[in-house]
Length: 369
Image (cartoon, rainbow, N blue to C red; front, side):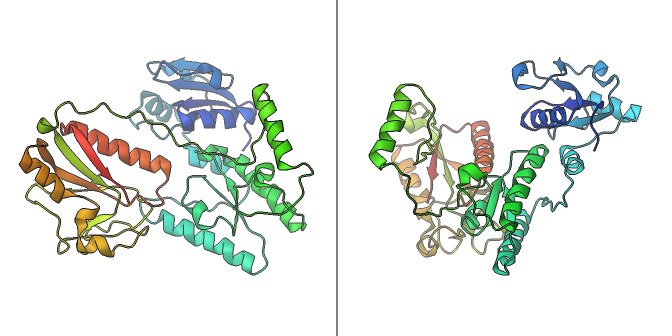
């Protein structure tokens, strides 16, 4: 796809739109960028005309095609004007496919993505067993990176498909080295995800001297690379204590994979993409006759005998009877937490929180396995 001297309108400057803008600018396109938000960090955007605030039809002047972000509604005035003027509208996936020259296998849809992705991982694994070299690309939060950590070379991909050419370039470079029989260096040098493999070699300097070098660099404000990376968890500020529990309505949420007996809702056992809401308004306790666990991360038998282990409705009913809490919310929320990417977990958590706020809930008891 030839982009030199092309004028492109990017609608929406979030993560996806900004990535599209950078990718197009790097390939010689002239950009027009627009977003209805006023607080966009202009410094993070490539050179081009920028329209912020209400949609301005002037943004379409001289444009060869339009790239809308996924969150832009079809009712957008600019999209309607582009269609009326016969200006092509290209989504980010189509844009990426036009920028990439190599064959593409794309996995999308509402159901089955994880299954197909796993199938492709098995194809790469089988290819290696036959002596063929295999390199693949995945987002670091994709559960597939946990399924094949040591067997496959996995190049990390970005949050949007627009940056896929960069990942493909890294994959091609690795594939060429493998085809020539060259030994690969460490993950951080070659650009693939760490595989958990340890190699014995001489660093030429003893550990205490390397540690002193890093300490000295840190004290002097100089750059250094630790030999033991520490991935600190995100810090979340605790909510303020509930002033009066005796007047509070408490909700129950579990990531233990609680399902109705027989799993009629077809909840998955891992890698959740949604949660389920069940009513307990008429229940004092959860019975193994009506409820069970469907979760791939622990032995389910104990929960199947007594589901209250992962959602202690019986104890909250006792506290409700004693007047220690004002009441138990009539809805419970359940999903399996195992292997669910952080990004999806955040989305599900936000949705549950919004639902609880709309229900006037004062507190929530989250039970994890």
